[in-house]
Image 1 (cartoon, rainbow over the protein chains, first blue to last red):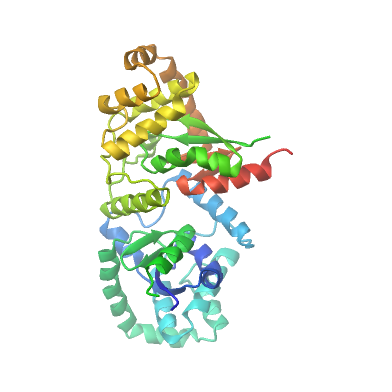
Image 2 (spheres, rainbow over the protein chains, first blue to last red; image 1 turned 30 degrees about the horizontal axis):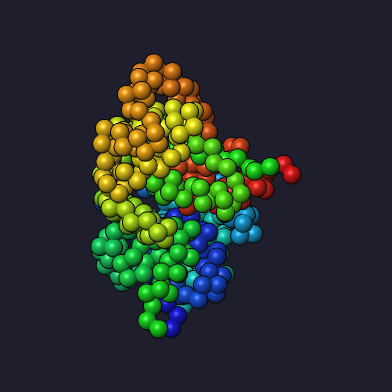
Length: 200
Length: 200
């Protein structure tokens, strides 16, 4: 059986760019399946009294350079630093959630991250939403009308309780049972863990 | 020529435990030399307006579990969580600095981290300092008398300027030229970088 890993993430997370771009390859190489779980990380940040984005210039400079190096190792050439933080991340997460339910979530996320990191349009902004939805054959007005019903928003509120209970505080988190692996650079470690714990 | 990597660290850093315990093995496996650079990280934390230690319970819980998993993978069995934060980290860093000058720094650091993580005595505390120095054949009174001269303290103040200029904000940092690699889990990446940039 292919072990399953819950991948909790927010569409506003910078390091999650690296993850979305290599997710299919990691699954193939490690023989695992990532179950995508977008969540409203900023709600947790607010509860923790944390700023919704990096404020230390040293850490921020390091992050962009680190992403640049790791992207290059993946054969990617993003335009960095990308605009940040993304004001419409809550909407972006809802679109991803809906897309995952309807079967177009993963390619939408990959298109959205490319649009953000290669063309500079932030997730959830009209300049990102329209083209990223079009890339997966979805109509923006239809998607927004669906979200306006409020069901996705309610489902995501319940997920926040689950994320809080797990102890999540960033993105991406790979979760196997209650075992947490934080960061794009821990996908493989999570995969090894999932294999070790998987029933044979 | 064996590439050289500056390893900047503070003796109060928890993840640096993993690094000190595997430093010799990484050098052998990767064909690099780590030049140990203890520095007074808390001075920089203060300048950044950051608390000298983790305050979010979620992040703290994650850190200890992550260290436990990674220590187990190295064949180590620390008693976790270790006491934290260490109040006498400035003194511990000075002792390390002196020891590195005098040639006993690395085994002292390894003994001190073992004493902290296996026996629960924090770096710089008498219950750590005495046994860790004795383990490398050094006399505590002689070491403290040497530090009282102030030369090490002055040298370390100059190093803080270098660390600030590099943009360091944590421990450990592997530094190759001006290229920074943050964390115990990036030693190998730094080694690969050092080889790629090393003159042939």
